[in-house]
Image (cartoon, rainbow, N blue to C red; front, side):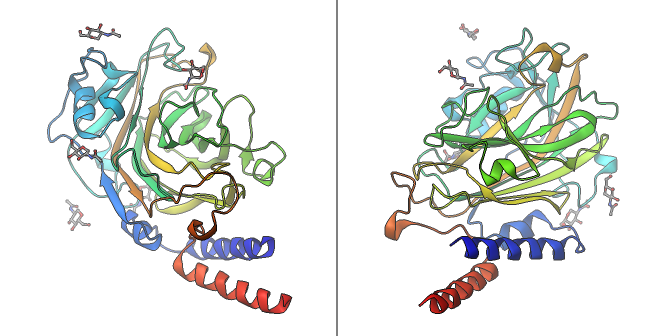
Length: 363
Ligand SMILES: *[C@@H]1O[C@H](CO)[C@@H](O)[C@H](O)[C@H]1NC(C)=O
Ligand SMILES: *[C@@H]1O[C@H](CO)[C@@H](O)[C@H](O)[C@H]1NC(C)=O
Ligand SMILES: *[C@@H]1O[C@H](CO)[C@@H](O)[C@H](O)[C@H]1NC(C)=O
Ligand SMILES: *[C@@H]1O[C@H](CO)[C@@H](O)[C@H](O)[C@H]1NC(C)=O
Ligand SMILES: *[C@@H]1O[C@H](CO)[C@@H](O)[C@H](O)[C@H]1NC(C)=O
């Protein structure tokens, strides 16, 4: 099995090496190449909507649009409901087909991060927003997910130490896996993006990983016992004053006790991060579930706070899923219901051939 996994990684690496010289991939190409089955395009308003100071219960303005149209979980936006508005695209002039997905000309989502704001549940001032959404329902977890969006930072943006950017959740929402509450691998996971100083970016993961695992020892990974794990720091770059398109593709580890989950991140259609040793979960009861829209400065102390009122923009948010995950108790295989992670039809066929040859040799 180890040898087969190794051959599998060679195939993945080989395919990435070939595609770096190729044209940037569109989201549609990534969707079909990876065999996704359902797609959700986050609805956007046709006219600008102002922010409103109403709280999540009495949401109005931009927050109300989200609670009514984005399948937010429990119909609430817990944090930052007064920091959400929809405005004319500030980067329309610099956008092109690789930095944005599509060419919609309508309003884009603007988040405000007031002076002094950081980690919304801790700081004195709330900034940005955080909410969960389950556009495919909250009953069926999925084996495979892709989140895509365009994010834009204004020229002169002060990055401070970093901040959260949207991603996905697995298992139950609100079940930890953020804010320093670690993943045990049995009930939840979260995979968000972060910006770091100087516009560098990374994937920020709450997943169960032993500090001594091959995952934590990967050169692209920084494991942290207290908060999330950083994957590929500096392999993403957010150029200010324009859009950056992100496509993040994730495939569950299977069986759940093996560290063989896949993660591929494309920046403006080009491969930027690729790992095949991700421990997304430690039992078969967790699968990918929905959107974890999280964006704020921080970080859990005032050294992360925004020194001035700042804004970040989002558009073309989409979420795609593959087959339903086959859930099972424990960390091993689940017999007949176990699913292999799919790397792509061609690679899977090759791996199967290699497996047959190896099996024959071993006999
Ligand atoms: C939110 O606003 C509603 C309506 O104005 C109010 O009844 C409720 O107490 C507020 N909730 C919080 C947590 O402030
Ligand atoms: C698209 O925009 C990016 C970032 O501004 C730029 O580097 C790239 O050259 C542009 N591509 C085209 C085809 O204009
Ligand atoms: C928008 O994209 C579509 C499909 O790629 C293309 O046919 C159309 O000409 C584009 N429109 C503009 C205004 O660029
Ligand atoms: C998501 O929200 C839309 C609009 O309210 C609704 O039509 C759709 O049924 C919802 N989807 C799910 C899975 O609840
Ligand atoms: C973290 O866990 C504590 C204690 O169970 C809980 O009060 C808090 O709400 C959790 N925070 C998050 C972000 O889940």
